[in-house]
Image (cartoon, rainbow, N blue to C red; front, side, top):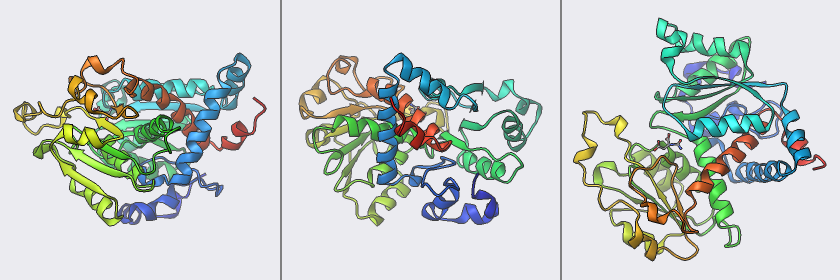
Length: 358
Ligand code: NCD
């Protein structure tokens, strides 16, 4: 069940992230999310709970008996993957996560193949999906659409949860979960995420993964955030404001090499030129100093980690790929496990899995 039925859309829309959070939780009062819409829904305790569940699922899945057990856990559920924006990893890892838990899936990957093309509203499309499925995992170029759709569904006769798999330039909460899961695993024997310096580099203005991860990092103690980008693509004001308000130490600069030397993790991002207001606008920006290659690798601490949400272009040279500090391949696989954990938790199966005999 859900709580979003207790409030009108305009009233909900106006609320702060913190005030919105309780409306998105499961009614059972277990503190787990029902709808997953933005990073502000996750505090440290919840992040650690989900990472523990991901580790547990990963372990259980190692044996055939365990894998078959997991395949039965949510065999009575169906999920719809509704992606109206390009995706490889986010789509496939959610699909694989559903398969691990035995969830049957359906998908629309292009609005042109659905009735939206005939003029059906998004609200009607979503209600249609909810007639056949028990969860909608959605990606859309529209900021805030997942929120609106979550409210619509919660106020329909078939309320089902929504997972935001990327909304416009705004948020990508499940990517941030897998980024945190990767950082936790990378620093498992190095004191965890507390006290670390994390550098973001590339298109920080339009990269939704940056906004979501920057927020999640504020849940940890003494984490410094460094933002390295050409001026035109620097981190947006709302991200900076959250950090300032929370008293988080951060730095905005344009020298990647200096930042790499003091970083524990470097999070590279792609230039998001699909958002250019005029064709070729990004190509006019000099991004040559915002790439990670052999020289940067030499400067990175031996215990450092290189992350990237992918897809990459040339912002990480392929010569870095075999370095043990390159975490971007593991990040993808971690994404599948943490998404399986989130989906299981959303349906209320956290304890069942944690306490099972495997
Ligand atoms: C990111 C996205 O879609 O925001 N990709 C992803 O989900 N792994 C980053 C990007 O497209 O650059």
